[in-house]
Amino acid sequence: MSLIGNVLGYALTVFLLLLIARLIVDWAEMLGNNPRWMWKVRRFTHAATEPVIGPVRRVLKPVRLGGVALDLAFTVVFIAVLVLRSIAFSL
Image 1 (cartoon, helix red, strand yellow):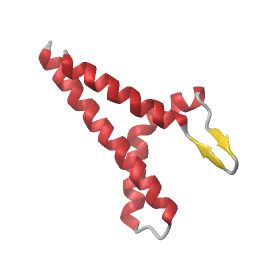
Image 2: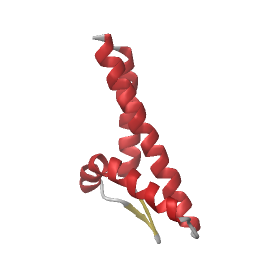
Image 3: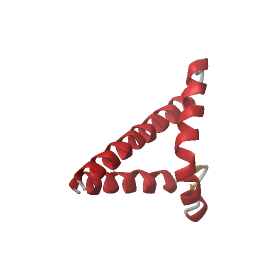
Image 4: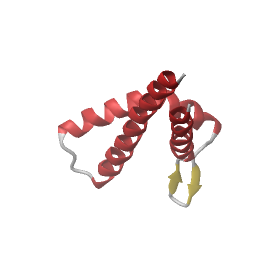
């Protein structure tokens, strides 16, 4: 059972790193004047993480704070991956 837990834990670690990369790329995009490779990274990170975040976003709509929308789906998925990763590594 430990092998399965380790494999699952490492897969969740890779997904967690993709979420962090998505976060950084999205923040960098807000600063503007992004190089061409940044768009490719953004497209890759969104393609890899959106199948998980999308269904959560349909349930948890972004919260409007004036002119800004706070995406709670990303936060929920991020925390869930952290919790599942710690459970997987403890198996």
